Image 1 (cartoon, helix red, strand yellow):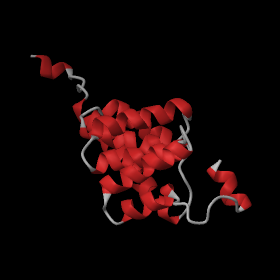
Image 2 (image 1 turned 180 degrees about the vertical axis):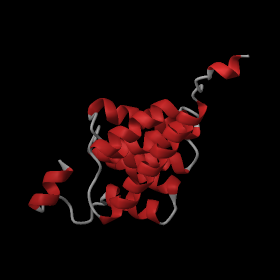
Image 3 (image 1 turned 120 degrees about the horizontal axis):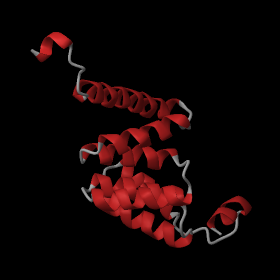
Length: 151
């Protein structure tokens, strides 16, 4: 409904756009306040994956990584191609030591990455992190022993 109101110009002009308010608060580092605004935006657009991803970002920034991971997983259940959810979840998993699942999500992100200049830093970060995971896997894999090493 909020979408149509924006397009058609309907709605009360004094009405607060909670999503935009949340973005402004998030940008200014007011993560708890941004979370409140995004929750209000979610009431106006229940299940909106874009709003849910912003909520997950807020959770991450305030240290509620378990909630962030649950929220990203919820987004991915609704939209398995949600690049932002793959990206955010990958780095949460990486911090918790789950390199294999993190790599899967980075690969999914890079398979359908967002476009644009602002997204370039995320694509670059995802590529370098995935390469680092792969190097780490290679370094940890058991090396074949040569016949001379057995004696």
